[in-house]
Image 1 (spheres, one colour):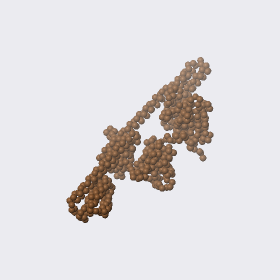
Image 2 (cartoon, one colour):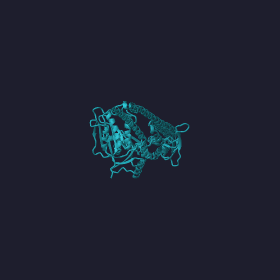
Image 3 (tube, one colour):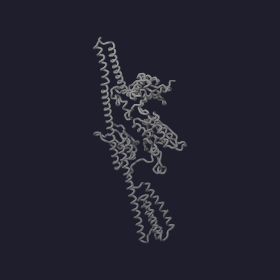
Image 4 (spheres, helix red, strand yellow):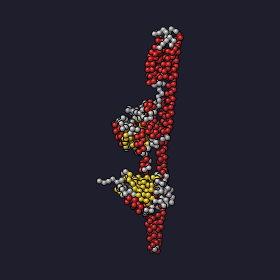
Length: 614
């Protein structure tokens, strides 16, 4: 695989798929938060349009979303494709996206069942190693919300439908039965009307069934029970049959109503269990737990907006929009001493008792998440102090040898010259002075490296960027180290354009990297040095076939005073790679380690190509 592509794939990139509808702004803001939580990852957006233009999008919405995206530092892309899920996934992979944000489907449940999987589910199935975030929005066909337990057992729509069935089915059944009636058919007629009442009860519940029972009872008495066309009943048994008929209708309606209430209670219990399971899972997400819990609270209770505000007034997380009149229900979250850690603002309707019970669970988990975030920050601060202490210990340990050795040698040489006076031969004097000179030069380099490290870490490194011939700098570094063709294999691109760099800093970077590679290269092997250009970036690669470094330890190799196992105290303070990385980044480039094909480590120095002067 192309090595630069491999490096690009390791970068965190968040891609948001835009449908061209109004929910795009919500998706972009959510994707921006995902990118921010990922450590400032790159934000991209793509809109897939159809070649036959049958799938329309709102140009005004897309223009507004593009402006929002650019204001957040993202880039907008548009591609053409018939298979929208495949086009989105292919674009994500070609741009090395690590996370994908898509909106929930606008279709309802019935439409989803009839038409099959939508774009979102198809993208999830095809995404592979890409993490997919499904975001709900105001236009989504289904959003998680707790079923309401107030009001009747059946919805108003079902009750109305029950009355419609009674009003339409009653006359139609009457016409059919009256057309085929005989003196012996009264039993089948009663059972037919009984069936109608049962159907109405199943559809609309007790009130439509009661209406159908009374209406059908009167119809039976008026048209089918002697004497006809009157509401009088000649036989008491017929009156008793009509009474039983109405009672059976009421009992069936009552059973249907109870079943509906129990079904709704079960649905509510299942929704509550789903909410609690999701809340518990969100706490395990670490830094993303707080915004996820705030979003879940708004969706579950169908609120217009929810905000979590810190004790100092700063907004920790928000979802939705507050009501226009600014009224909200404040709920304290957690405790910090006598005061609350934060306040959860609920904008919208008031919650009933059962919903407040579930809200208490969310508030408790929010408090735990906030406390966990504070403990994480404390742990990070302690870790930073531990790292600083480790660096200090490493500095003292390294300086105790690397400073004491040259300093003792210089003092001994100068002391020998002074003590011997004229008794020293010219050769001995020259040898002692040479020892002192070498020791003082080593001390000077050590102090210079320490000062350079402090400048790099303070961000005050001054680099004089000019067009530089990379080949000249490579040859100068090899000459400084005394490395010849038997130790280095050169493959320099003769057409490599001039790069934008500071030649002095670049030579120091190459000297450090080459000396490390030469030191770790096995006997009988050479160090490879290559140059090549990729777009507007020039790369200088220094490869060895040594033992390499584990991927999980590659960040450590750039830490000051880190030798990664070199314990012979002959490799200096361990500042070489730290300085090299700082110098390279100070010139606007990068220094990254990669695996050498066949084993070993390759250090890639990437710098921008110099702009051509007119």
